[in-house]
Length: 271
Image (tube, rainbow, N blue to C red):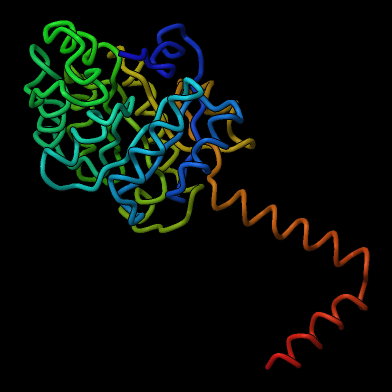
């Protein structure tokens, strides 16, 4: 089984860098992987990506020894194990609402003795039955990781018990949905967001777990100082949007109002 690049860095005390993909194309995943990230995060919660697209993105990452993290849609246990069987290095489960909810996720994503993940072995992660079964279970528990997202106020009362769960690898703070949950949508400077972010990092360190969250250039150093070791920076759709706006803006500057007027006239003629 290919060792996880993310876990290798985290276990060495380093920071693992991730970037988010909304686009389904494997070429977008490969470009991100070639850029030097440790992990690409592809999404099935908010994006209509199908399993074949996810599988191709996982393969694209593996070509460059880059992990793929798949955020799954909440549903049956099969939704949690399919990415792992496709050889994703990790799965992210959104909106963990309670200790029981977290226990269920751990149970379905870890093999014995940590959980009771259903066994197959005939897929990419088990080298299509070319890894001895006992060795496969051992390697999967060691080299594949689950990420549980805290995005709501409901689990806060049980937060320490959740983070302390055996078999939980990473706790991930999602400030966007959390801001809605506290009745302050989009107010990223809200005191409770900062308090919860710091609390999650401190509890992760206390219980020997990894803390992850989203960040940017502006707050990257602060997050690392807090104790976050897995940080997702940027997204493919943001990168494309910024690139197109920037390049169009530069071209329009070169031509001034003449280009703008020609472009406008062209649109009027087509209309």
